[in-house]
Length: 393
Image (tube, rainbow, N blue to C red; front, side, top):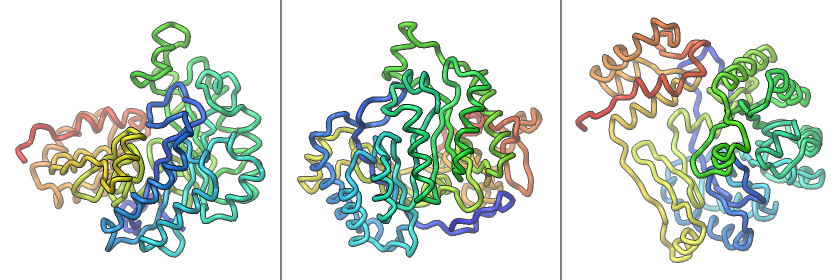
């Protein structure tokens, strides 16, 4: 199990490399989503074979690595059959060195998690479920065009906790029309199932989404920052009172239940992204696969990787560390800034941080820069002001 104390800011625990597998299919499009997916299942079997082939093609990238996490994301990975998930897991095991007890996560929607399906999954190597609940209120689910209803959300959780110890669920706050009381009820309903991990995000309006068009035409009210801020504060207060550690801006976990997969991203560990639109990172460069199912299939079938890459500059790596560090309980180590990036960056960071320190939005303790409780909701904006731009590389 992953053990991370909130007080322990040394990041001394060891997380190995991970494999992310993107399943680019959904039953229907949620109004707020801008991820890559298709609602046509015609090429699902062909895609599974292509994903397996990419896993094999890229095994040399992890020749000296041990895989500790396998994460099925999407899209909606639960639309894939159990036998297909098992095939992909087996392909990883045949071609990579895998840790003795890897964290293997399946993102799933409630409408796919029948009693029978949950039982079957519990017999598979998958040992963590990440369930897209979003809200327990019917009107919210309809507005977001979710494929499940409130009853399915509650029923799948009641069944899942019988077979899985490690479960996370997603909740969305800042939904137009959602009162503070409704939001509190959402949180308390989630807690009633004894779930050890909750990921929660503000409803955001992404360009070219159905939600954006609905707001433009006046059919749906625009989310309000003040409401989202209130919901965030309510979320933090309730979850911390219930023993959750706020270990990343949008993630709360009981001790030993932090997401190993996501923690690896935030701490700069290596990962390979398999599938259309999936991203990869090896510490020096970042890559991303083409976000087109047909072109992805065509490339993989021709034994070509449909991937673009960029070499990260020192400024890129610094900025990423600032962004991810401020979002987590581990914060930004000033010692690491000096050792890895030099005094020029350290002096710049200290200078840029002054106003936020004076406004009690940031604090420094044990040479670690972190947002205060007051500054947490503003973390992304604060981070952008600390970025180092226009450097000569």
